[in-house]
Every structure is written in C-alpha cells, then in structure tokens.
Image (tube, rainbow, N blue to C red):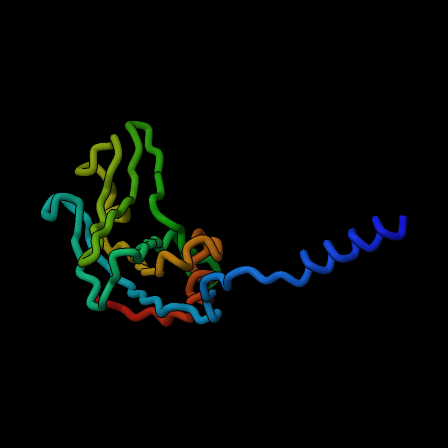
Length: 161
C-alpha cells in the first residue's frame, strides 16, 4: 500500500511540475482608435435617393462602419437609432439603409413605397452619425446604443457638412 501511495505521489509531482510551451502574447487592454462623424443630407430624386461620403480619415480593411440616424429629439435629447430603420406606410415600407467600403459610406433609401410621394420630412435634412469601429472590438458593447459605442471607444464626433 505504501508503495502504491509513493508511486501516485511521484506521478502527481511530475505532472504538476511540468511546463508546456508559452502561448501567444495577449492584448494589453488598449483600445484601438476609432473615428466618427456626423452628416446632414438630403435623399431625393435628384441624387437617386442615395449619397456617397468619403470618410476623411484612414479606414482599415478590417474596420466596421456603423451608421445611426437621428430619429427624434425628446426633451432636448437626441434619440439615435442604428440603421437600417424601417417606416411603414399604407402603400409600402421606407427603409433608411447604408453600405460601406474602405473609402466611403453610402446612405440610401430602400423599400416598396413610392419615394417621390414622401413628405420632405422623410427625405430632407436627415442627420446621420457614422462610427468606424476596429473589427477586433466589435461585440464588446451593444452597437444599438450610440452613446455606449461613443463612450466605449472614447469618440468625439465632429460635424461634416
């Protein structure tokens, strides 16, 4: 019995004292810089209900662009919504949407409603906030809350008009 306990003790010591190879170096906790801008524009028949805007700063191939639309103002507070956003009408839907490349972002109207019949409040003076986030940081905060994203990445938006 003593011999079995001695063997088990030696094996346990051998297994707990072994070291494997060192793993890859982890992140130091620093947040990679993010950028943002705000833009006010018209989406109408003249521009085919779309607008292209260059970033004005470097965007890496792995970065992700998020676009928010100023939906309303309540008690002096701006209410932002992550796009796409849909408005339903009797004759169909209006979708505020966007897509992006490494060089620019495109804002556009989509949907089944007749855009030419829309009230100008749906197409004129629309305010958008564009936030470019490094892909490594996506998912670390809720992207639906603009203020949380701006705080998380310490972004100060500027107006680009």
